Length: 258
Image 1 (spheres, rainbow, N blue to C red):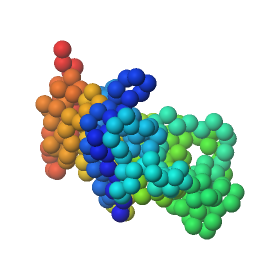
Image 2: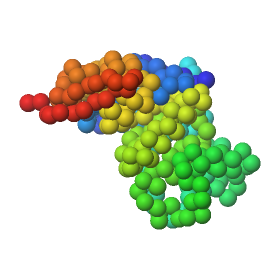
Image 3: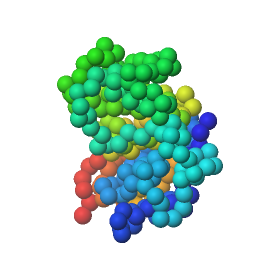
Image 4: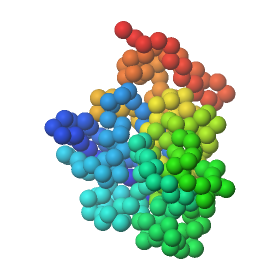
């Protein structure tokens, strides 16, 4: 069971402060979704949690150890990160791309251990790409490529999974499949953090939501306490209807506010 914490976290990009005063604890077994308007600092936050950005103040800790104290291999085995801008530039077979997730374990696509082969098989099955193993990844549709890259992250078998906009390029069915995968990963004991823009999908799948605005936490907690009409008006500048029916929370944007 792995715990990821950010305490007093402040991050600058160049000379511009982007995050400040971030105090968050991400628990194992939970899917946390980070939402907020454009420029709120969501991607900066997730990159800092992955150890890819050096904080100006504060620290990110993994089970009490500062990420800066971990070796690159330790961090890569512990935290799998899938950026929004991930691309596939080379026509590697789908199984080969997924197998890149085993690099932190000292394995390569052409030299996988038995455990590595099973991790790749399980990851491709999870994202619905069984039977695609030998196809060049660059020949796939945008949504299929997005699932290949998620399989690569899953094949790492890291106890922490950080994903930036994992459903942005997917059709509705595969959006639901990927969100089910993220929830299943969390239920298996992992710590899962995702950035999303679709507020209804976030409301229906997240155990917890963090709302960022202007590089600071506006609200955090269960979806029903964060995705309120007042918060949506203040943070997103929209009038929205938030309804609860049969245990489901639905957010319907209505109009931009002046």
